[in-house]
Image (cartoon, rainbow, N blue to C red; front, top):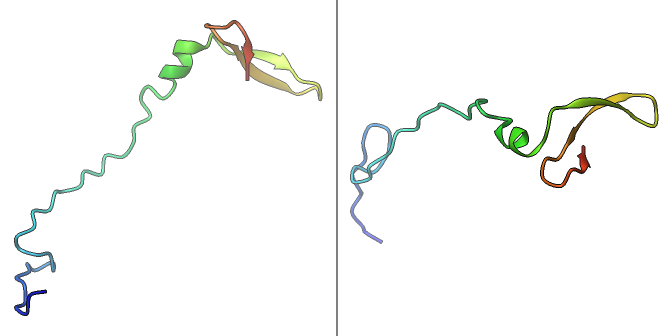
Length: 67
């Protein structure tokens, strides 16, 4: 370890370290259902055993009713 103090900038970051700025764009909601629409058909209402109606979709690949 060096006995000399290392040079830091006004934020306390080492001068010889290049800090990349962070873009706070966050995740987008665009195409959130793209995979679902690719593999599953349109949603339809299906009555459950307890009488509640739930949305179901049929899988396009295996023709199995997926939940």
